[in-house]
Length: 482
Image (cartoon, rainbow, N blue to C red; front, side, top):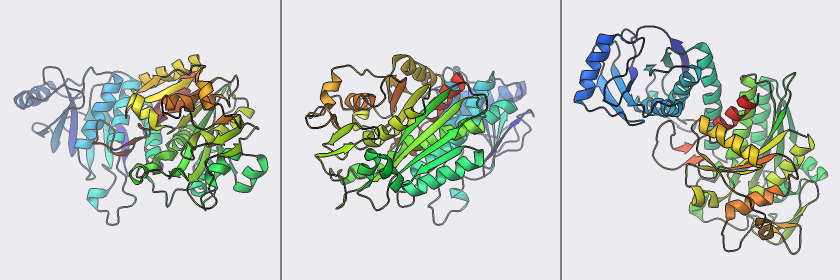
């Protein structure tokens, strides 16, 4: 089990498997109050010979030399912003390998947020998912057993534990195969975690969904033998003066339904519940941090499968609240379950509502694999983008122009679930579709389709597989509001 704590001891005398230090623009080891000057000078000489780079995340490994460490890991800090420190600490953590041991991080950080960023990066860079390894040995265990962050305060360490823990738990959920993670099991997980923290958890079972008219969830989930659920997880501290509702898309596996995806496109579709996972663990993080703000998470859970009971293209369904939708493509299912969740969430009259979803492939076409889109009410959109910038998570504001409504209006129902038949503006028409279910509420829509699951090589604190996209931004947003 990984543990993390602060240390005020001399970095040269700590007996550890690796000592992580920063590199400046001249390729020399950065000074640290706990690193003796003569040791810094000696390591700098070696670093200069090896041409250690100051580029953000660049790693150079030295022998322990004049320290008690087995090896010294030098990492470039770029411009040394909090984002650079987080990224660099993650890169250094990945370079340390997987064998359990002790790592000491001596990256200079001037305040609580900087120290928290360093600790977050170290924990997230060390993340591995080994739950399904049949012969796990020391090489497969979850990284190092002990992390020591030099000069950090207890407050910085605790903050990092909450944030990195929420991201890692989100990654765990998204990485879990759909054989084991399906609507009912996801709901049980939410009940278990929520109960531990004193959150109020309510689960709508299939019959209750039918009785109350949740037509989006039922239509998407009726092709599967594992029926849908709606889960409400509420953190409601005494004295909270405002409420934020978070609504997450939770398609535990997406085949596309009758509008079947190509096989290659299904390989990562266990990640189509990333929005719901992010929402769940953001609410739980608010509880762990005891944030003085009420946060309600809505998990819209369904499995989209083709079968004799699946919804068909040209079906007309009735969303919770009464609006009708013509289903032209069963692979545009996320917006149907979110519509149910948004309307129900707004019945509780939150101050703001934010939905989070791996909603469209068009998001990746427009913004690539690392930048999420933010749509909705202008002030809230700007607030979320500012929170994302503060934690170095890429998010970009996108427009929802009035003309887009024409593209989602149906001739036989109130709306249709696809936009331009030519495929243009697919991310925006999906956002415009959702907008029709929020009325005058202060609302934002986050499309995290590509950033939620990383298929390339590791970088910084991001490893292949689930990334935990949006969790850090949402937590920052809640902290600022609180």
